[in-house]
Amino acid sequence: MRKFVVTLLAGLVITGHVYCPAYCGILDVNRYDEDATITEIYEKSSPSIVLIEADLPDGVSTGTGCVIDSRGYILTSSHVITGAPSVQVTISTGEVFKGDIVSVMGKDNDLAIIKINAKKTLPVISLGDSEKVKVGQRVLAIGNPFGFSNTLTTGIVSRIDYKKNKIQTDAAINPGNSGGPIINIHGEVIGISQSIYNPDNNISNIGIGFAVPINEAKNFIKLAMSNAKISKSDN
Image 1: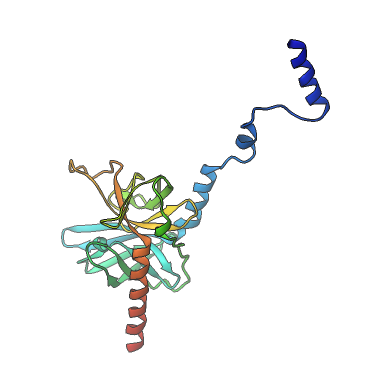
Image 2: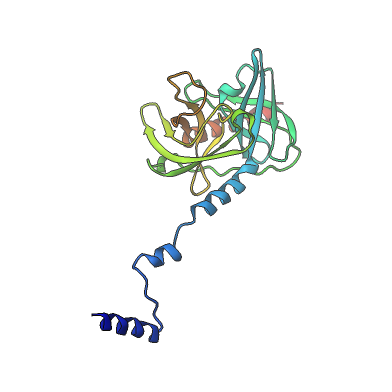
């Protein structure tokens, strides 16, 4: 038996073949590099993500927004800016601009569009298709939790709540993430961070967060942008 094994290995060396288990080609050659992919998505997406600070009677409301139009239109959560007499937007370069509220959606879908006059073309985030979202898919959340700008967390789609039209994820979402993107592994926004579940009144994340599906936001964006153009032409 030992002689047979030695002969077999010698034959493989002579013929130029290298012996390895059946799985070694997958691990060494075709292995999916998740770290590199996540880093690439973050670097590509983060320039389109902004910090939003809204002055409210009881303090400053902090949230996140996504640039959806290079002219300065930004998608965020309505609860971040509702009732604020003034809104301040900080873009990825650190520049700060006054934000004007363009449109606000109802409470259930919790969406709003604001506009800044940056006097330059802004990088725009890529929007995906939330109809294609499946439980178990890897996702990224980028936002400004507790004021820590452009923070990245990762997780999966934990559940899809078809009744309430929400995407549930275990990617860490905390105060300040609201209005920020939930991004798939292709670098496309599939949801907008909205809320977290905290039955013990702990304001930090416990792994149950919810996002508004991006297709819901797309319908809102189309209508809001159309109304914005009409209002501009009327002036």
